[in-house]
Length: 459
Image (cartoon, rainbow, N blue to C red):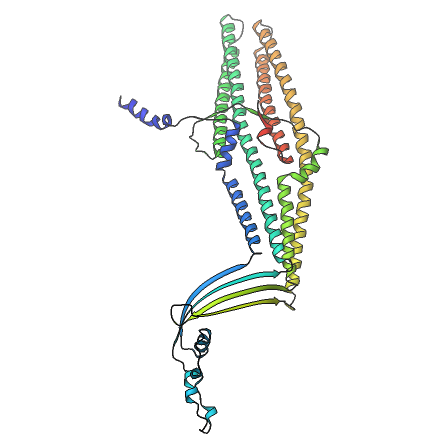
């Protein structure tokens, strides 16, 4: 009883976990929510969106406010604060020490001016600054930020399609492994049936004992293959858990198997559209635009910059706002000579833009080649699938004929096992062909930028 109790206690955690049922669409939804790569891409989108708002905000006035308290006996600052407080007097210039009747009076250093008593000042200010003309700098920043946002959004779409492809491979991998397990189960049934038939014929003295031993060896081999198929299914299920970002011990029940439809058309009609709308190509194209914005920003330094400023401030020797003043103005600044720094910065930005443009062109050419290759592989896989289905029918018929010949004492066990092996191989090849047809069609749609849930249907 104690052993039973311990066994039940050990098994309790597994019993306590409910089995989760996921069809393909639900599996994709789980992966999209939990995949760290996609979350990183989404963070990049948020970062780029913040950059756009920052670039837009730079065109608006910048308003700042501040308060401060100062106590100083520095001669220059003390006199300046008294002026700001509207509190300067003739005595601050040393008027009490000035006596025209004394010789050399102009050489007397006024004590109140040179060694003033400490001055307290409580100040506040409100200031606004507005760029009036930036020679395209702000527009370049905005163009660059907006292009980076579009690139990040295209990258997000590309990442989502890539995750759909990964989930499809893992999801279909489980069903492929299960199909191999079914093939192994049929092979096991056939091996058991052969052993019973050979044993019966041996008892009747029709076949030799070597045939019986060979049938038993064949059964052992098939049992090993069945275990390998079971292990393959567990491995495929572990892979699906990893793609979904779920613990390996989470019980899962999958929905129906899925297939991917072949897109309508030919590569000649697909390539131009894919080069325009493939999200990875879109991301690169927007990166080229962002590099162009950087060139605009660098070039703006060749021209003058104009800005306006307005400032309102108060000063008081006590806590208050006794003295008020304002300042308004317009300022033009222009770097007339900087040793070629700006020119080199423009050249650097232009070279980076040209390099990105060449990268885009290379990616477009590679995409065209990828589409052609994916189309050929998908078309071949589709044809192979039809051929494998016929091969299974032919192998099944051949095995049936050889089995009947052996049962009638005409054929040999070697011929029977060979026919069974051909049937097992044909079934396994069919499983592989079905999986390859699905994955190759998905690869083609991924290259076209058209892999979504609508293109994946239940089989």
